[in-house]
Length: 480
Image (cartoon, rainbow, N blue to C red; front, side, top):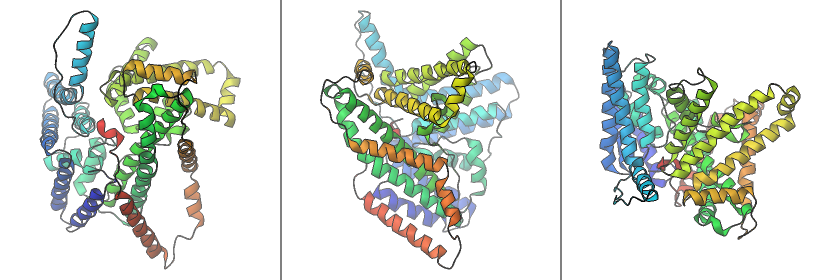
């Protein structure tokens, strides 16, 4: 059930109406849990049992870790949680990747093997909710979180439908306290909810879905097009991916706010990043913070020597790449980003000895240069992220972009550049708070204020319903 679909725009008002039909806290919790499982079952009802199993596993392991003071017992229960969650992801998401890779390696060594791929269906959102349940057990083990005594609260934390299938990745400490009281939305929450859902819907339908046919056509046969067209397609996919995923996050946050819940932000104008490290602090923030806190720091983080720091950063970013997809182009994409982050660290250390260069980069022209360079490096990486062929095809496409190979068809799409310009302009406006400054100058009170706002929101919802009657594409991050 896609947020931008007509089915969801029928489903969600019914959920809201029944949620507010009673003030009883227990009723609201049980109803939201039921609605969330119905939402997840709309893709494939069989995986509801997997969702429940992961919930039961980590509720149990969290409780047992908290009850035991013996270190080896605490570690044993934590190991059960980590192994259980990682095994689940490995089987459903990576089993065929491991089989194919091992088979190709044996063939390269001249050892023929007869191995068949498994008939495995990837459950929607498995990487998201497995990470969330696993962090619950880890935080209890680290004594940063007290376990909840309510299985209902924990089950609702895991399955809460706005964030269930594509994040943002939420930690128990962020949502469980809200679930204890089950809030109700006030007028400001409703206003914010409509605004965020509407903005996310427009990002998804007017930008991401509109760019998808062009991007699909070019990357279906990248060898047929010249380097300029490949750059255009790569920029188009970056805009599609950003507006698709950021649009989903906006809609998720908006849906939660309708019920009075707060979800964490997942994007912060990534195309204004001054360097690659800054980009990852702005793009998919909850994944980056998860990998930083639960993997990078566990490996030693920046508390170890320089060589070990490089190793930690490379391992972390390689696994970030592998998280995005079970294919070697995704792995190389992660390695590429790791190299860029490590390279930026050395560059930053070098700039400390060059005060003039550092001063220039701090100026407006220098900032524009840094932003442009970061965007170019990011767009180049998306040839790996989007590749539908082999790793050789992806690397060949990237090389043709770098060399601006003129062979092949030239088919740039001007709407890609328009979309990029609009995203940049909106990002600058949000960063400089143009909208907030404008609203501060407008009258905020008056007899028509509430009715006019309500009318505008009703019109917006009607427009969304009309748009939703057209076929919309699944969100890009559903496959992760």
